[in-house]
Image (spheres, rainbow, N blue to C red):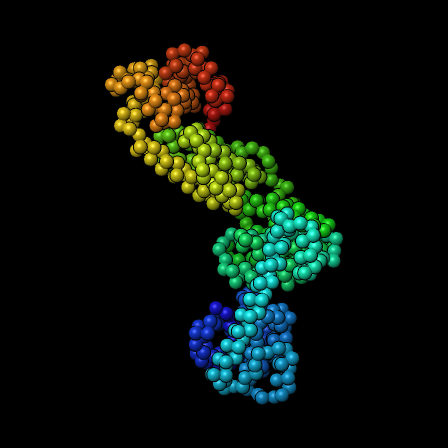
Length: 502
């Protein structure tokens, strides 16, 4: 669908034009109107149009002035003149400006439709040729930014696409829009950016805009960046960010500037407002560890205990605490915390790493807001609950009963032998079946369960560690201390001191 814009100082003429042509039948859509050239130019700054139908004689700015200015700004726009005067001077000026046709009012319907069809045909041919060229050029630049092209081929492509820059200072500017945006609007932004900087702007496979900019004047560069920021602020409804890479000395080093722009773009995660991301902005953020009061042991306990709502509240609460903190924590630390949640649960709750781990980590690294990060973790936790439920359903009735009994009597002296007597099953067979269905040998399972219960008591009571050891099933306090330090890494009293305030 191609966009059409109507310009005439007589409102009834515009309404008549809308009704005269079955626009959609010809792949056209009227997207705007104006009563003079000046008003039209202002409105055309905010939307992309392919065809403009304009009157000649209008107040403030006439049709020929409009076409002249528009051809400078958007040379590919097709212009059709509608006039009540058949004056040769007007026709001659219009032809010089490259108009598609000069139609007299009242407009002949068939003549107008024929002109529109010819204009569409030219647009399609021009678009196809331009897109083919642009795709090849963009692909070359994209490969260079990712160090996927050799020096010889790069030099040949630079010459072919006239990509030489006449300055010693080059940089990459990365523009990312968080909300979904149509391809034609992305193309519109690309054209506006190229006009503003008089440079090459590509669209990468992720729909991001990448500008290659050259500048010898820092003040001029900053001024244009501010204009670019205003451009996005005026036309983007969702969040957007513009990351400015470091300056380099040649096109061969542009990949370094792009890498820096990508590093800066990771700060989208912690920025609540849209705008520019520069070194000056990110230097305020610290690589200090997170001071969240939420501890992973609580989350794991909720998951093992099938307390889904508490697990979700833990996730939301922990990231809400990070989000509202006055301390500016670098996004690498926050993403690291999210990855730690995933890997810890996979290792200690699921007892194995999932095939989907790489995909989850990739999503975490690409998340551009705390809200999206929370959604990713909650999706993962939901999947964990489903996996545990499926495992539980797949257990044989005897193991299901044994596990339930252990959960209720973990503090007693339990062994495969005592359990085999209780459930009338051979102890060797019970041990094999238990390991097969839980993924742990019986002794490991008991030790893990008792230590988790011990942590809970250390955190929630004032009992001494030796007493707690006996309450969770360790008859020998020294053995309890030894096992706790071996598995947890520190003594029970040290662990209590670290977690008592959480």
